[in-house]
Length: 115
Length: 114
Image (tube, rainbow over all chains, first blue to last red; front, side):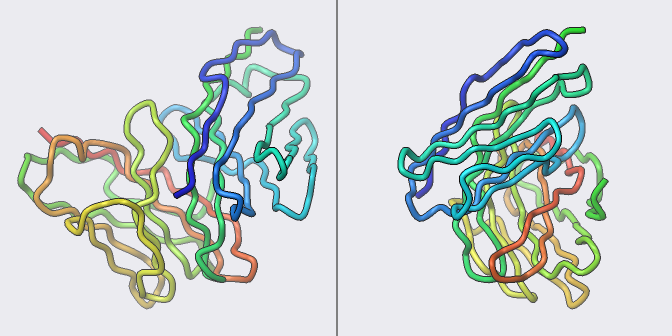
């Protein structure tokens, strides 16, 4: 089955700096890679995703890059703000069928943005 | 905020008991997936329901079972509870489409087994 490794497990940055979180996956059949943000006491919130036919995707201060050959993908957050502080999870999946994905999650990164 | 709701928010059960957790999917979504999230870890896939049938299952024993109803809401049932079943149980809904759509999570149910 799929295995997703995520690094670092904790990341502390100064407000305004950039943050980068990296993930590797094992199953070359995986074709969908979402990123989730989870705040304390809440469910994971989808913040950005990328499919295997795309190398990079950007949404305002957030970007994701995918290297299918190396089987790794990364989340980049620029101009970090205190409200970005949370636990971030990467995930990888191949579609079960046209119904949905079975997501395999990384272990999470606790991001702390210091004012 | 997603339109996915879960109930109850918290519950405490004793080892050996049975529990039922409920999930209402976001409007327009016909697929519901369940995940178990132990403290300090990423969510783990339990199973997925699509149009009232189990569509895929992770590495969980048969005492974890589920249902999906005609309105696409879903239940997760766990029999013979064990201490290790203590976790946050998350459901996620998604539109059944090709390619598969994004999954949106509810707030979760915190289960404590004593």
